Length: 110
Image (cartoon, rainbow, N blue to C red; front, side, top):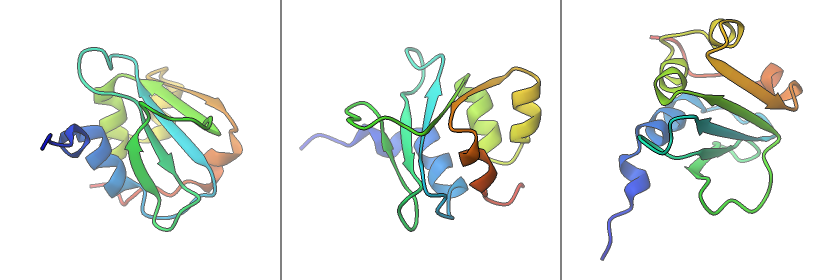
C-alpha cells in the first residue's frame, strides 16, 4: 500500500488550518518553487468546511490563483504575514476573481 504524500505536504496542512470558513469559490495555491518543494493545491471554498487537496489532477479551473514561494504562502496561511502585505510587496501574485479575496477569512493569526 502506497503512502499518501499529500498528508505530509506542509502547504496542505497549513491550508486545512487556515481555511475553516466557506467562501463560495475554488482557490488555487501555486508555489512558484513547486518543482523543488511542494505542489499546487486547490481549496474548494464552496464546501463546508472547505476541502483542500493536491491540484495535480485538477479538472475544473480555479476562480482565483495565488502564486508565490512556498515559504511566503506558508507564512500567509500560518498568520505570520498578512496577505495584503505579501501582495503589495510583490511576494504573492493574485489572479482571477478578486471578489474571492473579499470573502476569505483565514484562521486567526498567531
